[in-house]
Length: 137
Length: 275
Image 1 (spheres, one colour):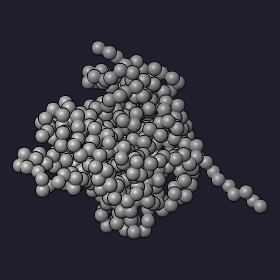
Image 2 (cartoon, each protein chain N blue to C red):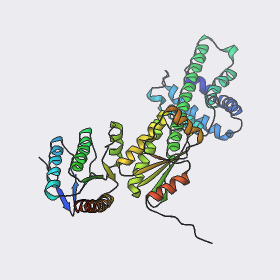
Image 3 (cartoon, helix red, strand yellow):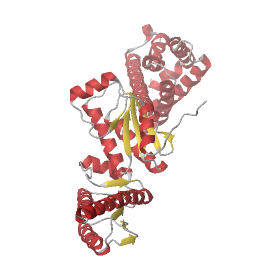
Image 4 (tube, rainbow over the protein chains, first blue to last red):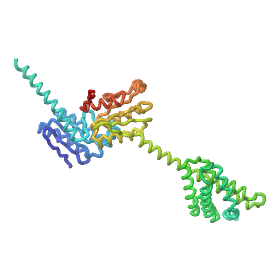
C-alpha cells in the first residue's frame, strides 16, 4: 500500500499528495497526521493537492476530518493548490469543506499558518500574564 | 427520349432562360456572368447525373451534382442570401424548361419526360434548401460560441485582484464557462481576490444566484476570496424578496467599492497625494 510522506518544516507539517488517493491510503494518512502532530508538537498542517486530478466525496470528507482532528490537537490545517476542475466537482457534489482553510499555493499556505501562529503567540503570552497575575495574590 | 437528351436539345436557350430567371430574383447581388458560371456547373453536373437513364440523388453519378449544389448553397447561406433566393436559382430551371419546350407539340412520352424532369428539379431545390438551412445552423452555432468567448473576459485590476464583468443573461452554460475561466485565471495569475461584477446582468433569480454562489464557493476551495459588486437597487430588492442568502460573502454596490475592499483586505493602503 502506498503511504503519503509527511515532512516537518519548522512548526509545520507539509503533506504533498502525489498519487490518486485510495480509500485505505486516505485513512492511513489521517492516522499518520494525527500521530505526527502529537509526536512533533506541530501547530500547522499544509496539505498540497496540486497533483490531484480527482477528489471524490470520500477524499473531500477526509480533508474535512483531518482539519477537525488537527484543530482538536491545536494545529491549523490549510489545503493548498486545489485545481479549478476539482473545486468545481466538489461544489457540484455539495462539499464546501467547511472549517478547512484554503490557499492558492504552498507559499501562501505557509504564510497563513505563520500569521496564525504569530497571533497565537501573542495570545498565549497574554494568557500567561493573566495566569501569572491571578496566581500572584 | 432520355432526360439528358431533352436537356441537350434545348441547351443554349435553356441556360439563357434559366440564368435570366435566376438573376432577376437575386436583385443584382450576384453578377450575371458569375451566376452563369454557377448554372453552367450545375447544368453539366446534372447531365452527368441523368446520363445513366434513371435519376437518384444518392447515386454515384450524382456525386458531382451534390458537391456543386452544396458549394453554391453554402456560399449563398454564408453571404446572407434569403432561403427563397437560394432555392429559386434551382427552381427557375423549371420555368425555363416550360418556356423553352413547345408544349403544343409534345407527345405523351415527351410529357412524361417533362414531368419527370420537373420532379428532379424539385428534388434538387429541396437539397439546396436543406444545405442552406444546415449552413445557417452551423453559422448560428459558431456565433453562439464566439459570443460565449467574448462575453466572459476576466480582467486583472491589481496585483492579486481579478474581476469578471458579467454582461447579459447568466444561464447554466455561461455560468459554467465563467466559473472555469475565473478559477483558471486565479491559478494562472496567483490572485487571491476576485470581483464578480453583475452590473450588466439584467435580472437575478434564484438560479443565477445559485450559479454565483457556486463560483464563490469553488474559488474559496482554491483559497481565493470573492466579492460581488454592481448590485443595482432593483436587484437588491429582488434578492431580498426571493430570500437569497449571500451569507458571509462580501457584496458591494459598485466595482470601485469592491476594488477598495479587496485592496484593503489584502493589505494595500491608498493615500491621495496632497497638492
